[in-house]
Length: 330
Image 1 (cartoon, rainbow, N blue to C red):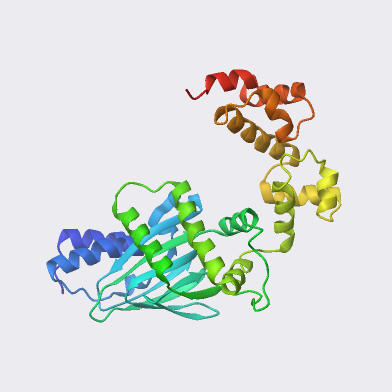
Image 2 (spheres, helix red, strand yellow):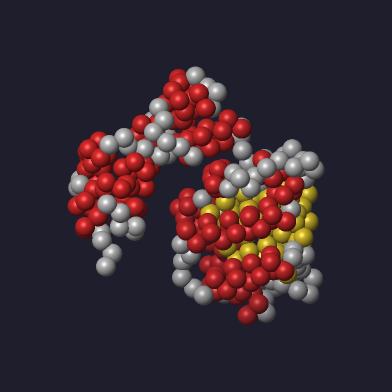
């Protein structure tokens, strides 16, 4: 029977009830400092949901960034990846078994991984295993495809759908990993906006250098081309003053089908969504560009100032000019 001090026992308890990665980090650090060797128990083979078990409600942000270090000779665990991930291995080697494929993650490549069940084994020999994991949901990919649609063009050598893609590191990727590591070590929470900028930075670089591989992975994250078509049409015409029938026509759909698909994608009706988006644009123009209401209404699809002012006051509870004066940046 191995005697385990209370701190190690606490870490083991955390491991048994939740976060494998988080608890492993604490446990392995304690093991290293105390020169303990604790056998791998069957309890460590419980199934863990990642990143949910580590970050809880914070995983709902759509993007989670986590630095992970292991210091035992071999670790093996089962997990259900509820989000996609980029594995940025800095040291060591990990074998990940998925239903469709086995991925050999190493420090010479980065790996784009689709959500799913996984059995992972880490062999670190004389070196520790360390990596940064960026988890992201399918919506992030769909948003990326719409935002950068001019860059997303099918290529001759593109494979149709690849759920797992390996990319060899280059200097830019190495610098990216270093910057991310420094950001994590600086302390404090990373904002949702910063996480999105960092992920997009990596996706854009890989898309530029390895378009076939990146597009094959991105295409595997979209349930259908219909959703992308609708989103491109809708989000490119926020200020277009197009009717629902006209938007449906551009999507080659009947108005009823368009409305049904729209609500499924955005969770609200076309009218409510367009008002919300146009008011956001108007508020930004009034607040940050210091534009006058008479200069704004036509930019967001309103035919006259009075209809814009009425909609704005209903949404914000104040007139456009009043909002501008209240938020004027001196």
